[in-house]
Amino acid sequence: MANGNGALSAAADHALVKTFTPLVVAALLAIVGWLFTTVMELEENIQQNNIHIEHLHMAEGKFEEEMEDIQKTVTDLRINIGRLTAH
Image 1 (cartoon, helix red, strand yellow):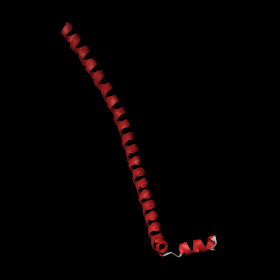
Image 2 (tube, one colour):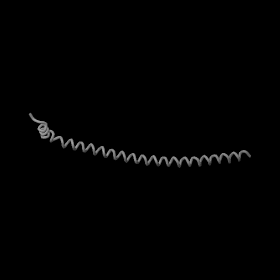
Image 3 (cartoon, helix red, strand yellow):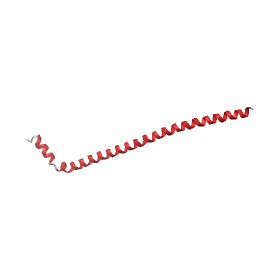
Image 4 (cartoon, helix red, strand yellow):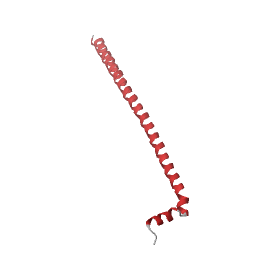
């Protein structure tokens, strides 16, 4: 009767194990590499999106200021037209 070490040694010497172990290791390395590059690409996209969002917030602030100036100008025009037509 073979002990546990003999069975493990016999399994490790098996031709299929010797054939497929490098393939399994290569597949695992490929998957890990693919996941790493995917995560790096996602991180870059997130950083670019954050930059675009910051620019949009800045543009929104400038647009608000310009709209306030336009509203003030329109109000002044209405006041002046009202004064001219009242006389």
